[in-house]
Each structure stands twice: as structure tokens, then as C-alpha cells.
Length: 164
Length: 229
Image (cartoon, rainbow over all chains, first blue to last red; front, side):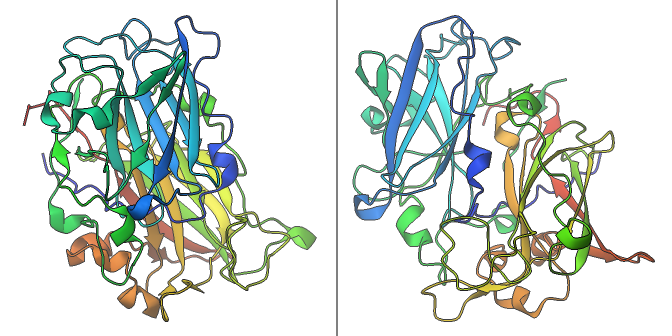
């Protein structure tokens, strides 16, 4: 079968409509599991925080399943003027062969393509985390029910990112 | 059937840091991106997005006294996967500036007038053939601040979902015959001329009062089981 070539990705630009990022950062919606908050700062070279960065997440439910009709596992948030984003979600369970994790996708002005990274809850063995040298940069810092996951796009404590 | 995601030809995608677009050197990672094995997490995706992201504003041009300024335009955009199979019922987000080159966004400080009858954001669902249609006005060009003369050509921002997490596509659609297309740092970051050409819509003949532009988006994904890299 002939294959079509995927369309070129392009930057989101600085003017992603605010309302597109509203009301999509709460994944809980009555599903059962341990409710947590994931929050952090998105910054660029030199650590400057970035406004209106769009983050999307995709995660398993509390039992480690990606096909639960009662829990969509998808959310979107935008950073505020201080570079801070927040998600309210359920702590994911371990999917087969994986440690519990949350997939992140980052879209922004100056990013010619989407960036992909993964947040983990601990240094448990995981085939994706094992690829990373600076593992601690992908492990969220826990404080009660809040998990802090900062994303540095470039320089300093640069977050490891994945192509595909 | 399962979806698999294969590596792309780098010539058909922008590579990160682009001369002429200074922010890329502050934001694109300095370390090479890692390639990971694909399992259930990467090869599944949200099923109920239309509930979370409900359709809004199917017509941006308006009528009569509420008509937006600019040339009436109809966008016909089809979403397909790499096998050429249409994606019905998928969410498409569209946003663009007004005919004077001004966005509705509060961060747009460009000195161009706001059009009270134009709101440049729509969210639609593809029909059975993977098609969305949007009646709007043609966006204007605008200068990018602090770049020494870079003007963005008229373009439409598009955000779509494919079948799985890794088939997410955010891109821009350009208009044919625009002289600014030749020098745009974003369009020309795509090195392959054919891949650039596929980001430019096609004007189709119309007897009505709208210019009709047809466009195709190809999201990543083929049928079949993933091959571990």
C-alpha cells in the first residue's frame, strides 16, 4: 500500500486561544483512585519562566489501564505568567511492563515541533526511564498529594525529551 | 487493529533550532531527543475528546451587520492517516488572525485594529470522510516583533488528534501564491520542497462569493503491530 507522508509539524505560536486550554486540566471527574496534583514551572534557557505554554498529558487509570471508558486519561493545561501549570488527576497504576508514569507533550512558540517527555513517581525499573542518563530529572518531587515536575526546555538542568 | 508509528524522514520536518527564528535557540533542547520503545502508553490515545473539547463556533465570518472584515473564505480540510484512511469524528482546532493581522489573544501587542465581528478560534469534528469545513475570512500578514523585518505570511493554525498519543499534529496551513511564503522562517524550516508544498492549500474554482481552499492533513500512524526500534 502506498504511504502518505505525515504533515510537517509547526510551532503553536504565541497566540493559542486561552479558552482552548480552559477546563481541561482536571482529569478526575468522579473516577476513583488517589487524587493528586501535578504542578511545575516551564522555563527556557537561563531559567526564564514561560507564559502560555500548552502542556497535554496522557496516562493510565489507577489500575494501569489506558482503555477505561470512565477515565479519559487526557488533559491539557496552560502555564500562567509565572510559568506555572497544574493538573488534577489520579495517580496512575503500573501498566504492564512499565513503572507508573504520565506522558507529557509540550507545545509552544519557538518549538518547531512538539516535545515529548515522561514524568515518573519513583526510580522504579522502566524501559523508557532506563534510556535516560539524568533519571532524577524525570522523577517528580512529592509533597503530600502534590507532585512537582519542572520542565526546563534548554540549558541548565535540561529535561530529557523523546523523539517519538 | 493496532496502530504503529514509524520514524519520519527528517527532511520533511523542522529540526529544532532555526536561524532567523531566535526563540528556537532558547527553547529547543540542546541534547539529542531519545528514541523510546512503543507500548500501550504511546500507542493508545483518548477516546472521548469531543466531550472534553466540545465543538465551538463553526462559522467565523458572520453575516450582515455582524460580518467580519476580509475576503470570505471556506476551508475544506481533510484528516487522513499514513495509509490514506480518513479519520472521522476527530477533533480539529483552528485559529488565525483577523484580516488586518491581529489575533484575539491578549498577548498580541501588534499595532493593528481588532475587528469586533471576528473571533478567530473554532473547534470542529471531522465528518465520515475525515472532512471539516469552516467559513471564515482570509487572515492577513503581520510583522513578527524584534526580528528586523520578518513578516508572517497569511496562515491558519491547526491542531488535530490521530488515533494514538504519538499521532498528535499541530501545524499551520498556508495560502498559495503568497510572496511572503518564500521567506517565512517557519515554512522554510521544512527542507524538503514537496513537504513544504503540502503545507500550502489549494484554491479550487467557485461560482459563489467565497474563496474555497482545500487542504489535507496526514497524521502519523499505520495499521499493524508496532516494531520495537
